[in-house]
Length: 130
Length: 145
Image 1 (cartoon, each protein chain N blue to C red):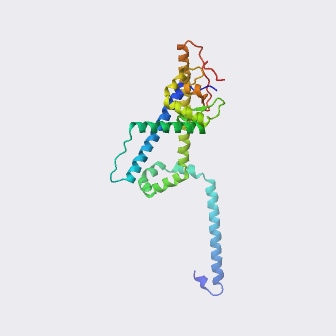
Image 2 (tube, each protein chain N blue to C red; image 1 turned 90 degrees about the vertical axis):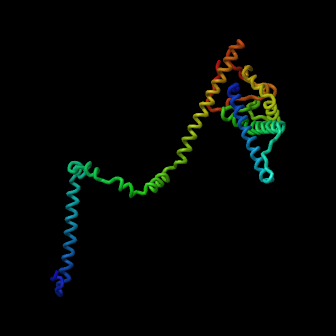
Image 3 (spheres, rainbow over the protein chains, first blue to last red; image 1 turned 135 degrees about the vertical axis):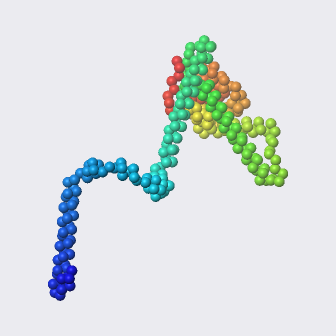
């Protein structure tokens, strides 16, 4: 502005203009924030925008091509303690199988004992050792 | 505590036999590698005679069973089947008893069949040496009455 180059009053005029500009921007920003706060933007966008049309036009393959999928997978794997999960699941499965095998064989022991007792005409059951 | 029956003990014995076979295979492999290292030019696969192989197998079996029964009363087979070899007071066998039982089991495996007939589920070896094979798994076992 030419008047800001005037002697004596130029500097105060420039300072006043800058201060007025700053106050104006702050006031407009505040007003905009208040207006936005009153609006339900999500609903507004849902009602006014055809999101499906936008998504249809998006080149997802291009987006995926820009992502470092291997790096992302590494990050996820680093965050998950896979060995611990595998170890725990293996242990629980093994324990279940072992328990099942032992229970079944103990039952088979009883069946054989019962069969032999019947064959020999004995009272069924085992004697507890003294 | 009820003694284990013929099925548990028979399967445990089969697993232990498998362990002995694996150990014998490892020993043979060691022998092959040693022969190859010592004399690579005239290397031939060792062909131990039948008597040597049988003696070595019996010795490995006796050592394996004696060691396991003395230390914990459990061999690999008995761990899998959830049974344990103990003495009359439910303690692990003493080394001499364990060794005698191992020899008896290796030389006279048919003695195990008496478990099916005996009312206390004892094998011939158990009767002679006062040992027992009890259920060792945490799941409670209720015998048939």
